Image (cartoon, rainbow, N blue to C red; front, side, top):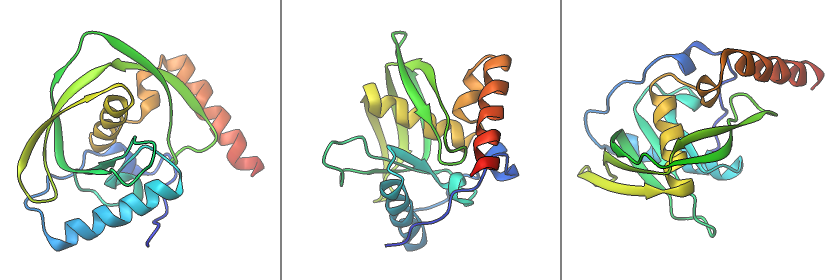
Length: 167
């Protein structure tokens, strides 16, 4: 089990788009395993490789109650998003101690390379959809708080900085 440290906001790697994964290799599978270990240790519902300093379009998501159901994705892209919204309180280990309620589409269809290297289209709903969208944002160099108004974003980051200085 390898739990990797998460980069602290505002590390430049968290603001840059990740590189496309050319093929699913044993190295990619090992990164996914470390990502799942890291996600489970947080605990969290998902993790993007950029969060642990790997600039590749890799993500894992596990919103199951019992865990152990992680979906491994390379190069995930949203093909379709529902018009019906869903709100959920989101957070990130890259900016600990704070969270915000974010509105996203309730359901999405995502295309990605799976652990076998095959292109897969999968529908996600509710928490799974929220987490997948959150991870895809990370891979594009965006954080969940980028969905907030400038004032709310500034207040959230200031609160996190205050907590970091205390801590």
